Image (cartoon, rainbow over all chains, first blue to last red):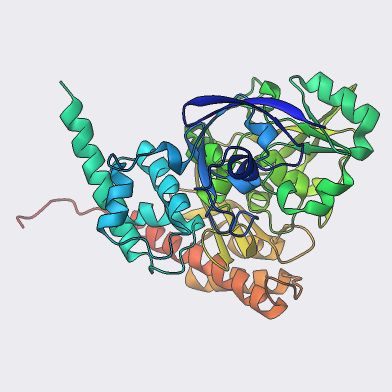
Length: 163
Length: 298
């Protein structure tokens, strides 16, 4: 049974036919070639597949594609472009918060969802927010620093834009 | 061959369950269903109930209950001011479910329907003496939470029933509460052991209406009457806290399984109760200390 859905992905409306048991993660990767979100554990433990669903961080492996019908999805590909990176992407590079890179898209999307709700988080709040995201390379220190640096830049940017 | 149906009214879902309940699976947040491929494979019809407005919302009913819709997520409960005011313990427990990604999807109704002995909302709801509102095509009933679970993954729900909401009686007075859990890591969903505590605090420092419940140490979450009795009507002392912790250890009918051992779990519930009671002891002592009449120059 193919289920017709309409879902807005990174600002663009996609009309797709998905299988009833197809995950949002496999829809993004296999149908839309958006391979930024990674399949790590496929059971909601590792956070490598995190995307935003209506602005909130979710594990794309635990959402059915059919359930995303009528909703809005943002993936790491929707964040920045080469030459015009998002503050979080820039900060992850600057702070060497990336080693193998497998956790990075999920980590950045989780951090983004935090900063959208809480532009000035404490380190404890950042730690709590990323507790569902595993990184086996960095030891997390660089990631925490990167998120704080990005938060600062995003706050400065928001202030700069005010008339 | 799996079918997927997105229904937009409770009446339609009830009709479907009445006709096809045995071969249907309900999906709201999906955080539990999607990690159990065997359950997904055994279903012929997947009914998406996440968009049903009747299952949403948090509010106070005319008859004085806090009502939380079954499809409300753990994060919504943790962040909600009405819940924090009237059932702070539930907000405390929901804030500790899984990771933020899980809390953004997983629902209160799902936590109950899955009936895991380790479900984090359950010890809190036991302390709060909640009722589970069930609906079916032509009937409805409210089941006290202590009668809702029959065993691991088993509830009193009939095949055509679904959870509409959870009802929590409003309380007067000042209440103190905590939820403590032990697990492999903070951001993971399954508790090895958990403790929920609720009591009314009086001006003379006595605690009444003491409720203590444990998760993951028996086939279902359990209240611990002996621990409650050790604290009921008394001023909290270290001796009484230790006696209540010992009662929790005795009450834990834990098993060895993939997540932990029986001995660890029995130690854990005792330690978790103390972990919550000791800061409370300090706080209550600080409150009781008489204020200095006149303030000298510093």
